[in-house]
Length: 226
Image (cartoon, rainbow, N blue to C red; front, side, top):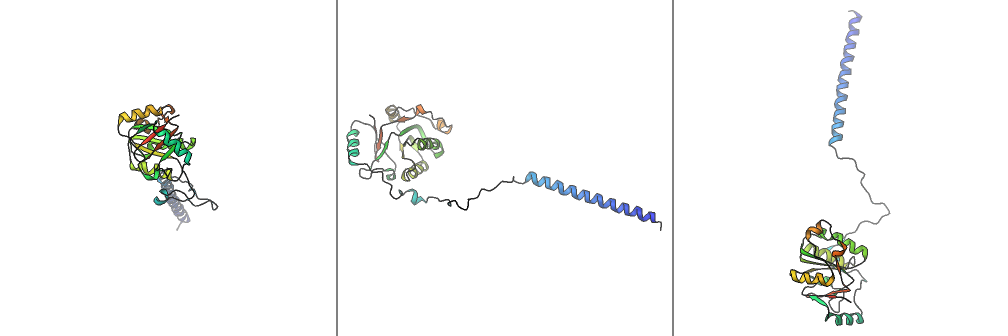
């Protein structure tokens, strides 16, 4: 058989092989591109340093238990001064919602000096609505009094845990009567905010009130001004 025949056959076989390899290579490249487009982006996963402390979390019991050595009790002269000031102080018929807010065991009082007072004309349903204000209070080192028409249990839980653990001296006060809220706003120099304001992060400094001392028990809160 003519050798040229075998040469032509060889060329044809090589050509078919090249075409097949090219098609397979294109197919793999297309698949890689498709996978790259549909796969999640690569991200470095943060890891704890070998020398760092492992994260710890509070149990519900720990959140309701004061740290060892924590003492917020008043001295006798301060108790006498506050007792005498109660008679002339503006008061509202609403106090702390739980005994966990007590800061002075002898009297059963919650006492806060120079607190920030926020008054809301509606129900506070989620902690995120007041979280920015809690952070503001922590940064300034001032206690926080939250007064609202109604306050959800989740918000009360968060305030209680922060107060018990000494993270922030704070107390939520439920006050449904609009006339009493208006009177309180006048007594502490505050403007009532709406839930819409809080959700939008609109909490101007001049809308917040203050007092020389906020004192309350389970039934009553007193605003003591100099």
